[in-house]
Image (cartoon, rainbow, N blue to C red; front, side):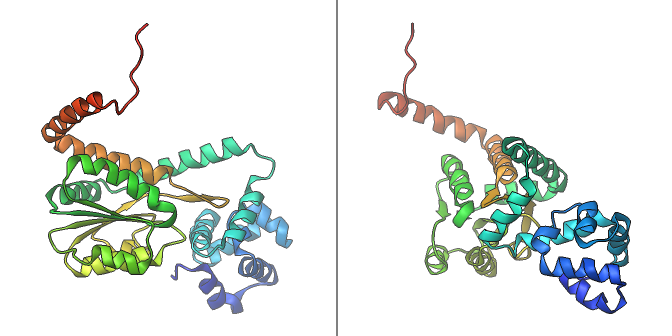
Length: 288
């Protein structure tokens, strides 16, 4: 079955009843709103019963309405413009408390990520990074902070870490042109997916480098161009892409790698502590 619900609707249009045609028409014309409606709300909106909406989902080949809704949401995430994101977020928010909504949404994404992240893939990614001659980290636009955060800590552990963020496609290729089979490339991409990151990962993989994709699906543009995929669930809140779960996975990567390089890291930080103290890098607590 096609992953795009709009394609499914088009293929099955001739089999729909009058009520089903109203549901299909609304989804086709307003999928950005329909994706975040319950079966009951969608039914009221188009003038059919909740049970009709549930049967419609099953008739389309889904296990039930939640599965159909998930398919709609996955499609929507990569299609919405910034203006549509604001409208959808406002509709979802309604009279709810913003802080509670955002925190609960982030907690749910952490839970989903804990279930979706393949531990064998995670360990394979850690091992690949430890063996690499050079580590390249690709993350542009909204995920640039993730790339910089990971790069900041990996620079304490390795001598050859290159963060490629905040650049256009042309400049990205200039920075990764020397990538080869001895290197590891860690790339970040979430809806709306950056085409420059996808192209960069595809190029790096063609050179024989090991590509670790940190993205929301193995079937995402980055996922299909990666050797190892670390799945992190992301969501949109108005203009903001929630990166709480991806950041948590980045933390896990750093901790896992640091545990493997404990002796080297201890020597590095012992030296750094002396330097920081000598040059007053950090504020000292006054003793009372």
